[in-house]
Image 1: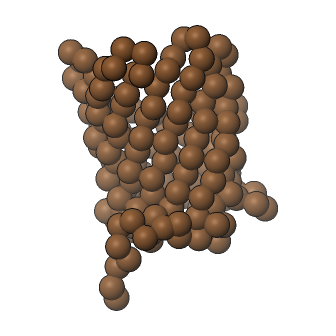
Image 2: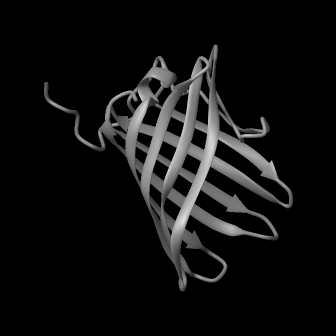
Length: 153
């Protein structure tokens, strides 16, 4: 079977839980627009089946200014009728994603700033997403590319 090119998208996804399950290589570019500082995160994102949804675990290394070290985060993805809901480990909603068209946008208020997410499934093996964070405390753009490295775990 021939794999789709990395940036063909948007690639419609009828069942995001099944689609995302597995292991993905993660590359994120970090930009602080207020200072011009840039950084990177590289690592692995694993979507593991969990109670009808997925556990989203990200681990890797962040390089930001003079800091270089380990970084991790976890979320939970719950399936719904029109996509998925991504929550923090404590159950607070981070965002809603309807990937049936291959793209989704949502907004999360984290006072005093606003986080706007844009997800685009580019192919069966590539997902691009970004967080555009604006407000009085932050002015950041976090751009991530997930590339599939393994099937469902």
